[in-house]
Length: 177
Image (tube, rainbow, N blue to C red; front, side, top):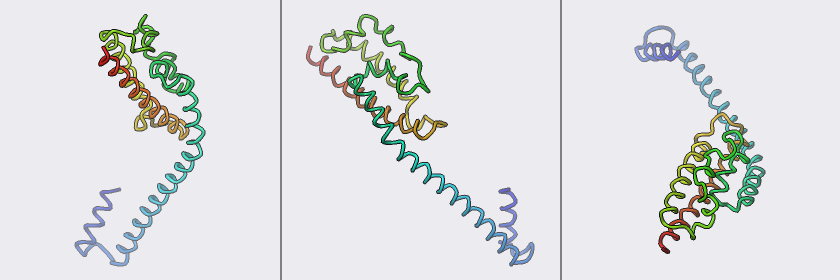
């Protein structure tokens, strides 16, 4: 199809290949076709934005409720991410409880851990956090409905804030010893 258009364009430039009026109407038809395609795309984008606005408040409130339930604690959030985003996760998808073992409950009061254990906990949490972000990142959640995308964005933001808070707590605990 593009080859045909290029040949027609070359014929028009050369001045040969037919009637000027026919070439003009062909050009107008192609322009009209492209404009119609653009109009459809703009209309679809408007519909998606409207759907996003409708879903945004409900999904954001739902995610905020989930964040509050686990007190925005990154460990708890990562263990229970399947509750809020079942499309992408199993229960405790990264086996944090198993990987941290006895340090799992101690990790909630990071200030009481030794530097070596803080580093271990921080490394495991960091790995699980990054793997989770790959599944809820706004650029990675293709093929989902608009409400699911909005929910993924809210989860992404909530986890990011919780992780930054966790990192600050770890740094503060390491510097305090």
